[in-house]
Amino acid sequence: MAKPIEADVVLSCSEHLPAVDVWLVVDVLRATTVIVRWFELGGEELYPVDSVESARRLAQALAQEGCPPLLMGEENAIAPRGFDLGNSPTDLTRELVVSRPCAVMATTNGTKALLKAAATGVPVLVACARNALSVLDCALSRGSRIGILCSGRKGRPAWDDTLCAGLLLADLERRQPGLRLADGARLALLAWQSSSDLHASLESADHAVFLNKIGYGADIAFACRQDATDVVPELHELPDEDGMRAVLRRVPADAIPPGARPPLPRTARVPAAPQGDRTAPTGADRFAPLLQYARSDADHVFLGGGRHRKGK
Amino acid sequence: MAKPIEADVVLSCSEHLPAVDVWLVVDVLRATTVIVRWFELGGEELYPVDSVESARRLAQALAQEGCPPLLMGEENAIAPRGFDLGNSPTDLTRELVVSRPCAVMATTNGTKALLKAAATGVPVLVACARNALSVLDCALSRGSRIGILCSGRKGRPAWDDTLCAGLLLADLERRQPGLRLADGARLALLAWQSSSDLHASLESADHAVFLNKIGYGADIAFACRQDATDVVPELHELPDEDGMRAVLRRVPADAIPPGARPPLPRTARVPAAPQGDRTAPTGADRFAPLLQYARSDADHVFLGGGRHRKGK
Image (cartoon, rainbow over all chains, first blue to last red; front, side, top):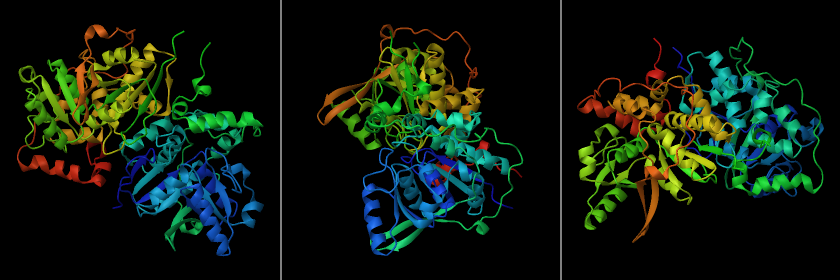
């Protein structure tokens, strides 16, 4: 008899990681969405690193090895000095990716979560709403104890990642009616079940409010297109002078056994398309809320977005 | 115009603590329930410490100062060697407390959470379901940014504490309809709203399953009696040879302004009384599941309680 499937969700990177058979790492706004998009567009190898400085060093080393990478990522939501790209999936184009099919990426939460999961020694897959069904197919082929690691923000749970974890669990539960949920997974599933519309719910997250403010609303809509791709990036470790290098590669499509796909429509509706073009504020205005957000923990907690708007 | 009330919930002690005006610390199974009970029965001063060793040292120092305390607490859910009492609220009696009105307490999660909150420098109150309304009255008199710190278990969120935080938020929201909820608070409120019965929901928590197994089911029922008392313990710091000593004292009843109490019945029902007497297994059997639970992180995650029972 097959082992019963169990699921646990770690709501932020500051939590202790439980023992599982496979990790699905989620940073839906935006690191894991960007990574999946990178492979959708033909990317071959993506090196996640834990800091901007490490990214610069590794890019230099790879260039010396004859493979100059695209340098991607963010620090306080914008591209660090000298980086080729920031952390927006809508900035990626097929031409760009095909011309530089190797990338190095450093982000505040997402790449760190990938490396934390990697340290546990079990398979690590990159998950977001766009590859939900495929990443679950792949995870179920790796073991019965499914762990979802949410990157969170600043060492705390974030609504956006929790919601995405709940979306994955809802799919998993439809395939596996006897699914066992640990306490963290119950919370994530509740977040999803309380949301009648993925896009509307994701937009209410503190970080989404911030992204909207600085003109990245289109990225949120992009991240909400569920099951838009069957790309599943998986983490590998390569020997390096200093120890090991983590690298993401796409799992070959024929290596993912298609699971029993859910017959029912999902709970939350998927927006048909991004709502309008990105209309980024320009000049100094664009960075004022960004800098305030980046510098202040207190502001982050009670960020005054639409959800929090004061009455008259 | 009064400041709008904001609420945030930290789901486990491993999270970064945000800036708030007052902390309500929750470890409903069982540390904060025991502490509130201690003051209900006439206790005067309770010193929370972070380890069994610190508890022994402080008890010795207090005895030398002429005030021999009751030594209370747990390590892996049982009273450490040489302690007068464990961590069960139903073991406390008025006679015992009145005869030794000073206590030292060390628990795995709850007392550590109190000390972590204390380090932020804002008022710290002890909260559980039994003093829900009173602790909120008191908190609202201290500021507009209410933080609830859940102790959690082993550095991760626990269903029992999250549920209790949600119960507090539901009361707060009825008094303050425009209440602003940060992401962590939204999750806790969902946990509460998904529960039609406090006792049944609390019993489904991993730690409650364990307490039931080792014969402490009566403690769970005891912890579920909402608003059974108006006792609110508050943390103070006293100069000590080594720095500061944290001590809990009861907030005088006339120092708590009664708030606008909610006119509606609560969402979840309160059990009328504990369901039967405690029927603790005896002998070695009692400790086998306990030791397994205490030693293994992996077992904790997917603990096989009633909620997880396998089908045939």
